[in-house]
View 1 (spheres, each protein chain N blue to C red):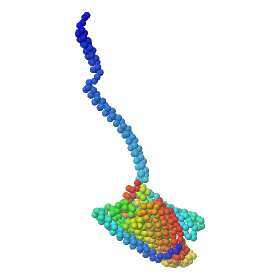
View 2 (view 1 turned 135 degrees about the vertical axis):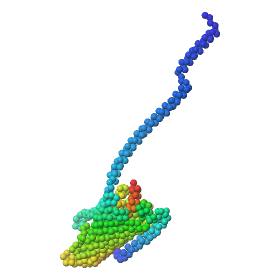
View 3 (view 1 turned 180 degrees about the horizontal axis):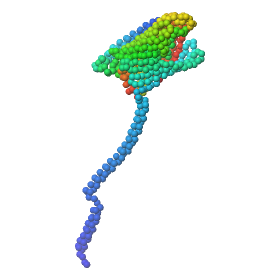
View 4 (view 1 turned 30 degrees about the vertical axis):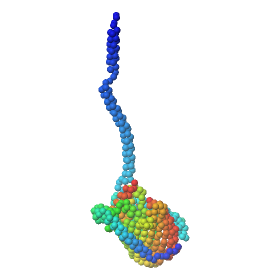
Length: 436
Length: 117
């Protein structure tokens, strides 16, 4: 068949177009439209956000789990702590064991030098807001010239007190007497600026230290100053009558009343400033033991303290002074001579006191210098030369303290002694004392 | 070394007492100045209600009251030397030993407990 050339071209074109069209129809099924694409993109973005959100929540959950673990651990620790603090603070009763301890070295001129130690535990029990118990012991070791060693234990405190209101407390038992200030305020070894006590408060002393009985004491503001007051009734001191060595002296450590006659006393103090005080004390009673002739005793004391930081002196000056009068009526000891030292009769009035000044450069920057405190004390005790253990004595003591802490001190001192009726007893003293 | 007896030691005691009284008067005058310089409501304890703290516990800050009072007989222990409970017992002990009023006991205890840890 003979087909014209134009028809051939037309057929070819028609075939090519239909093939192309067919091709195009197949490819269109493979592709998405613009709208579909946009919708898909949106969906994708939304899913991505969702996944990110989910991831984040997962991380948060992990952190939270960690935190929860920590909180658990902490609450466990808090519980343990609570348990421990409850153990310490729970209940109204609170207990504190304190006191003081000291190591001494004494080197008296003409006698052997010696070391010594003492320990005074003090038990404090607060039963509630008002009730309080104080119990103290004095434990010391010593060796006498016959080479016999012994440990002495003494009762220094055993009293209960009750707070009536903010200006008054009452109590009873074995307590430190508010007579003058040394025994009550300065006696503990870490408080006393020198290694030993002033004469009126020492071994031959005339000031009472403790009493068995009842007391009432307190303090109150008085304008811009303050007063304090104390009164007590106690078994009272008893006079030693049957020993040639110390007949006439008063035994202040008697726990029992030997004459059924109580001693009464009190002290009034005025504190013009927080660092100063003056006071007057008195105590009176019958002091003879049963069966001995009547002997009355009146003890009186004045005391003063002045403590002030003086910038011009780069430090603090502390001045303490006390004077004690002991008036005890005359008696005849061993009237029949049966005890081999009588009959003995003498004027039994004794007086004594001390003045002590110490200076510590509290304002200086150098911490070693700031801890040094020089001390000077003059003390005296006067009594009839006819009285056993009597006779006048006076001393001048120079000391140097080094304060390791507020409650730990190293002290050295030299004591120049002057005795009227016996050889002088100059001595070098050293002590390390701590408040516990 | 022999030292001479000094017959007039009571004179020394009297001297210390007069020094104390002199210092006191000066102290009171100084205190008077500070007090009158303060706001009128806080000046004298008499203007305070009876239940509130009185005396030095009212006119001094707790820390100052502690420094002034607790260094008088011995040097003051640092507050961190004892626990708050131990301070409570000690302050009850010092209430009688140091002739404190109830207000002073409370004020100083508050200071010691807050500074003890």
